[in-house]
Length: 297
Ligand code: COA
Ligand code: MG
Image (cartoon, rainbow, N blue to C red; front, side, top):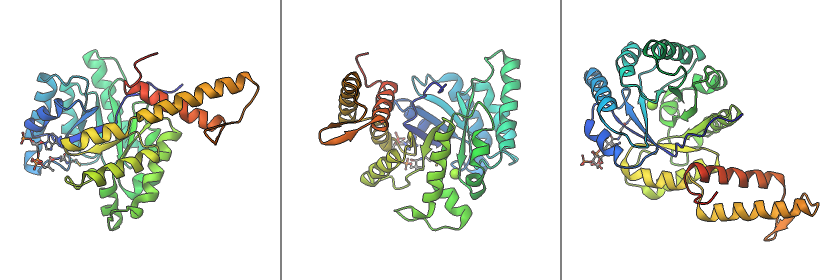
């Protein structure tokens, strides 16, 4: 039932007109590289950015990093040219900012289906990753999530949301907390990956790590990142720790023994273990497997 898990612990964004930053990103072993055509690119540079992104897609070896393009919002005059020019580079997916209506997602999906057919590529392979970052997007998150089979992850954009609503950003983030919860809940309900908000302070790595942990605790699978120094931290926090893996294994083993002895609930290290705990342990091992952290079978 569940889709193939794509590992997206960190999605590193960079302006699409910076070939240097795209090249730098490739050396980092980051799960996803997002070449931006939207708000990270000046209006005067939009056309140059499209050309640079296509050149990068066609000429650089991204290794194991996923190759994503963030287009401009559907409905803007830039969106169609973004798609038409970058499809020739055959990215792995498109990030759709300010997604608010299922029709926006459907329109991109239809464009991709036509292109895939015309080019003899397998149909449906190119993924869509909507960013929920407006009040309307939060209200319509279910419809956006279900708009296309290509939707593979929901991203939560706190900064744009705060701007859209007129909220004031704070370090604690309560002003966007309902929305941050709503996006991860919708993603999990529809079996999509959930990617957490950007942390803007490039020098506060302790604060960044704390926000990664909070996102992980909320069930986010990864985080949008904006600087190389954020990559390793996000990829570490969004993968299960060695302690988590070890404990998950003990829980599953103890559970098997309890089941064999006819026991549903039992105690392990003074804590009650029953099915929900076992399921969380199984999930931790699945995430560890996806992250390549399980050397044995
Ligand atoms: N991706 C890849 N490489 C990056 C990078 C990124 N997002 N951000 C910085 N780097 C590189 C720089 O090129 C530099 O390498 P170099 O000196 O060999 O060229 C190195 O990392 C150190 O960069 P630093 O000097 O600390 O940062 P900066 O002042 O050059 O850039 C930002 C600061 C914020 C402009 C930059 O981090 C950036 O572009 N971030 C992404 C912005 C973006 O995409 N926003 C839209 C999505 S939210
Ligand atoms: Mg944004």
